[in-house]
Image (cartoon, rainbow, N blue to C red):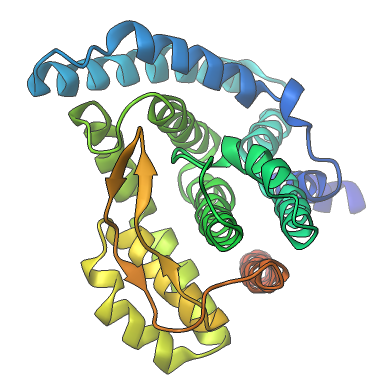
Length: 314
């Protein structure tokens, strides 16, 4: 009987194991496959991007490069899943490699600790790989604000959206989404954020993230300061440079009672982004509070998924 239960719910069991493995056995970045992929995508972006080319060329080049990479990798993975003896196990491995949360949380706590010890240079060096913006001139408050924003957005995209796509569309779709985020991450390190070259990726990711980011936003808003969160979403989130990001930062700003957003430097050029909230500026003690909100949302949705699986088996 036990073997029948395992067989009938193998995909769900593997899903839970993947979440637990990411939580307790995260891969170190220096031997994670994503590190290699980012390096490959970065080299590819440098090869095909030329600032002197026209906007239409940039747009077309980005689309063709993305399609070529996705088609090759996803075709290989699809064939492996098709001929695998236990495709559920391979799907779980794909999910495990696509998720990124625990290693990010540890780094965030370490950066917050360094700022408390007034070791700004070390904090900036740890923060630099998490951001596309310049960090060399960030103050202690700027470091914490940038860290909190990166922590919120990366957890949303590299954990919640990945799981949403995996459960809804399967492992191949989740891997495809993760590859797109890695491409954007690699290309943004060398290319201005308002370049036409990045617009196709931004549009595709915006569409994929539209529903899961809003579900996460509403979950955070429901946990604390619900009315304030709704007010911030209407006042700031709807008018942010990217509404998915705006919704999420608005809810987190209201929940934490801190100000987020604001101008940022990219390639020695100031980009005037909207400030979210009118409360105090964040400090190092707010980093554990952010992690607590995200962990509460994570626990809630895992519980929802478990309940749905139980109802399906009844």
